[in-house]
Image (cartoon, rainbow, N blue to C red; front, side, top):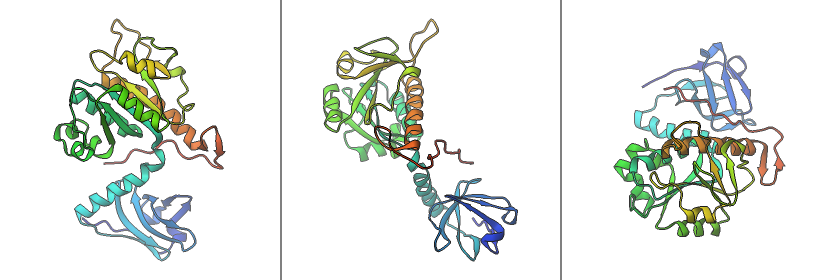
Length: 283
């Protein structure tokens, strides 16, 4: 598959601003995101066409040339590109925990949500033995991969036998936990929209099983309970829906924090905030 685009010089064809190169009418109005830009040598190693989402051309100060890439090479390049593009949007030190899920489809929904929203990893308290212990085996598990829409391939997942084992591991590495419930529980409870999810530098957000919800043991060991306000006769959400709503709010707040500060405690104020929204790719 060949796409060709050529410009005589940067001056007439490209406008360079930070990490974004906008192509002018001379190059048919394409927009490109720079992957490797050297401003001193004025060379570009790799770019992606924002319209198609493909890594399709390489450039130097002499001009812009779209290059032909075999389909398989292009697919691999696009994955590497996507990994580079999302890197700054991932929420550092944020883990989603699912406690004793009963259904592989519901667990896969949480994994899909976590990956799509930029959660760093997913832990699973799996007394029901739904998934294997080894992460590489999980990545190859067909049902988990299919139901998560390949989210399990791109998300680090770790399995634990018990709730206490998972808490011990999290606390060993400095993580604090909050649990989610449709009811008020624990020593401190907040509604989702009222919580500040940037206070805790390393945060684990727990979701209970579909039938029993979060366990009392998890509530005991957590810092607080977060609830999603309900307004109907039904006072619960399914696991996939709940995780999507909660993680959206948590990741939004933490991304906004990361865009302004480099370190915890509002230290390391950035001269220019990082973007908090990644434009969707065009398929």
